[in-house]
Image 1 (cartoon, rainbow, N blue to C red):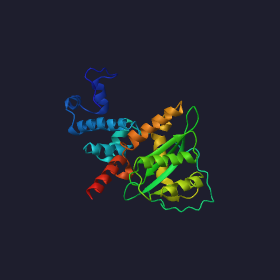
Image 2 (image 1 turned 60 degrees about the horizontal axis):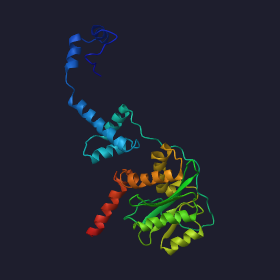
Image 3 (image 1 turned 30 degrees about the vertical axis):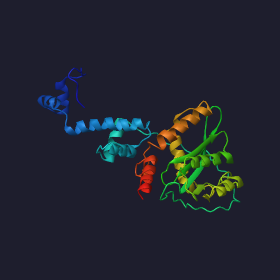
Image 4 (image 1 turned 135 degrees about the vertical axis):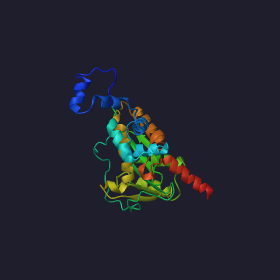
Length: 289
């Protein structure tokens, strides 16, 4: 810390130097000394860290900030980024504990688990996961059904409504198909909720050539990719907002998915790339082959 030349102190320079056991001439020599290159670099780095943090709307921790700096060709170690963020008081938003569950188990459904917690795939469209979550508004609940690609981690289809019955989850899957990002014979995996194990949903999957897969009852890890997305959505967006209307919530969640999560958010499971970048890379390899 350097004292300003015009500042007025409670004590004289002579008094402070004597108490700190330094010479008066040494103090003035230190004050006149130019800032080091290391100090200047760290000050510049702080500006870039603050920009990366602000661009994420305060959601990035030090690892994602570090990844963003690398994308800007800025060299800095992750520990230095964490230290500077701590000095700057930049703390990412933290997830709240989960409140309840929409799964209504149907123990009679004899459906295999084709995923076995392996939420990866060699190409887009081959393995999909789905789930439903609840969004509170002043008008009442809004339900969001999603379809996520295990290869790219992209939300390739979703639907929202004031209920979470079977037509809502079917519409989410139809929207994924409409986007042209579902392969023939794709696996569709979900939890063992009654709507996902219903006869109507099973008939839709069979009619469209999907391989049906479900996890075990009450085991969130069996559908961890869907749970991870909902955790990010609520931590980074929903829990920081108040929605007076369902329509306002619908627009905000659509913006989060389309403009942030799929196209700008850096995903650790993708080597800190975005889903859109991973999908584009697969498309280039397919065309080149």
